Picture 1 (cartoon, rainbow, N blue to C red):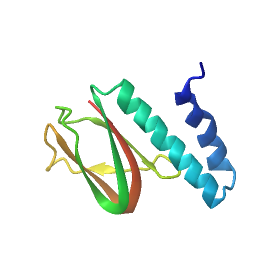
Picture 2: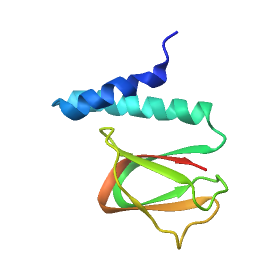
Picture 3: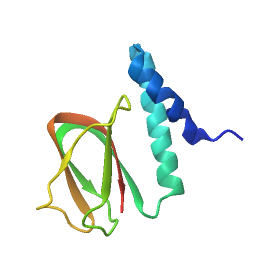
Length: 112
C-alpha cells in the first residue's frame, strides 16, 4: 500500500520551482490539508493542526497540548514554510498566538 504521507514530499519541491496554475495550487492545498489530517489522526496525542482560513497577522490557537513552549511549524496555502513569531506573554499550556508581519492564511502544525 502506498504511503500517502509521501505525496507532499514529492509535490512541494516541484511546486516551489515550477509555475502552477490556480487549479494546481488548489490541488496542492488539498494535498497539504490531507497530509495535515493524516498527521493529526496518527499522532493525535501531542500534535495539533490549526487551519487559518481567513488571513490574519495573529493566529489565535487553542491546542490543549499542555506545553508552554510547543514546537510550531507554519505553512502558507501553497505549502511554503513561512516564518513567524510567538507572543510568549499570552502563551498558556493550551493557547498560543502565532504572529506574522503581514496577514497570512495557512496551516500551523503544533507539537509539544
